[in-house]
Image (cartoon, rainbow, N blue to C red):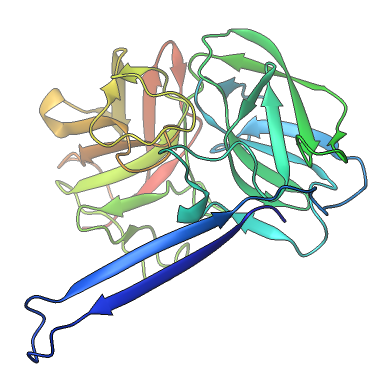
Length: 292
């Protein structure tokens, strides 16, 4: 299903019965796939291209935003691939994963996940407001390359949305200590937030940042939102001092944004709505649970 990556780790120890002076060595070796991909020989079929957070078929995809492609014949049945550390090359996410590539607006884009009926990818760094063409390519660059028909989807600079926990409107969120923030009925082991608590919310499609990172790149530090925005929790607009950070998530793909914010003291208990408005657009309905 593509390149093969070998990993090795070794420990050099000096036998003094402590870790002082010891050293761990790690290495990896990539064996390039020089022949052809043996993947499915059936032509891929596209059924929908959506914002990778909201999954709303009516919402356009956004510049640098995460997208999800639904369809058929993307991989053989039972095949499922997620990007691993060995797939990251020169600090960028791969343009081919499990012998699958995606083109958006004529550009090959980073791919993060592949299975038979789903591909997760990232839209290109293009300031486009209008229709763009999308195509899935199996075995890209090899003699047995297979291209899907072209699908058309609307793209715009801003298409903000929060990632949600499965089968809910609950935002994929964390407490300040990194533990899951959700009702336990939504995510086992998670806990609700309390008024006055700092929380971290994750989304995509919030537009350009300073500095700018290209599609597929991994920000090594802070990259704050470039354009003015507002955030409200439970209908209460957050003050600037309640927004610690809003921008790309350091160490992740450049399509993942995070918001480190403080829940207002006066917010009521319950599943309260959270909204971000930027570039004239507002995030679709999403909530976090609040319990005193």
